[in-house]
Image 1 (cartoon, rainbow, N blue to C red):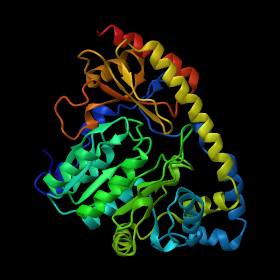
Image 2 (image 1 turned 180 degrees about the horizontal axis):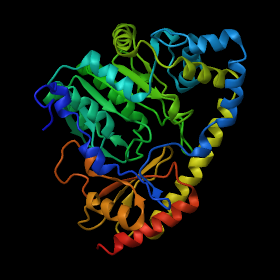
Image 3 (image 1 turned 90 degrees about the horizontal axis):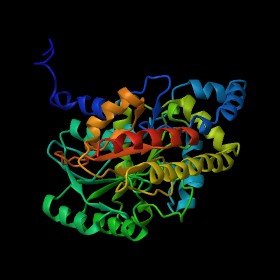
Length: 401
């Protein structure tokens, strides 16, 4: 109890970090190995390019003043045009800058969409497991999250349609490419089917796709938005994984009627996103840095993912199942036996100085779902530490069987 306990709003009453604190333990040990964080590799941050760009921008009165002045709710136009031409059109999404709004990262995008779509008690279909941070936002809006089955090809469309018919959801939330937390990718035919279901049942699909460009093997797939003939799919993306998480930049693509409401919610939230970040990102693309940068970061993650797959196969106990992602930053492991990874995490943090993310929190159904699972991030960990950390972790897990 606090002096404000009787004054909290209903959303504040459900806003708690208890689950996050249990699942995402911070790594403070100097010799620690953090398989828990979803951050890019430090080698993937374009420090040299941005040093050059920022020095030049602030030597130019026009561009420097623009970066430091107030902006518009939609974001600077040249960045939105770059998104349309360089990031969306090559993927099959053909839109104009007027249907793109710059946000302060992917989570603000989700908050804005909840602002305009959700009333208390509304139903959202989510993947099982799903991205826990967005579930926290949905819960603050007192939405009801209904889990849908996944397999190696992502959401199972038969289950999605059955849940639509049973629960009449307002939205479907999906991370279709190199999903957080599993690394699984929704197949091409299921992407098309999901767009068709959205049109058939008048449901909004939120396509959260921040890992899409980090593909280091396999065939690129068209976004769900590509198949959106009815205007039911809203595409959200972020610059955090391909540019800089500290920039706090994302974007949302939506048809005119939805974009009008998003823009209003944006003004009511923070007027506009960081102009400095917008200008630096626009210059990064306009000066041609991005293609080589993307090749570089994909090469980094290809090497780290390969090290992780090899280490898991070599050092984790027999009977362990794990995903084999073609991109992104994560793999998902299911341990044999009756191991509770929430309890295991406490022990490995204390005894091994190794962290991961326990599986329970990614399942909205609660109970023992995900009890013996873990999300393991390879993005921020160099290959030598991957081998060292996974061996130590695997050896310790074997003592629990």
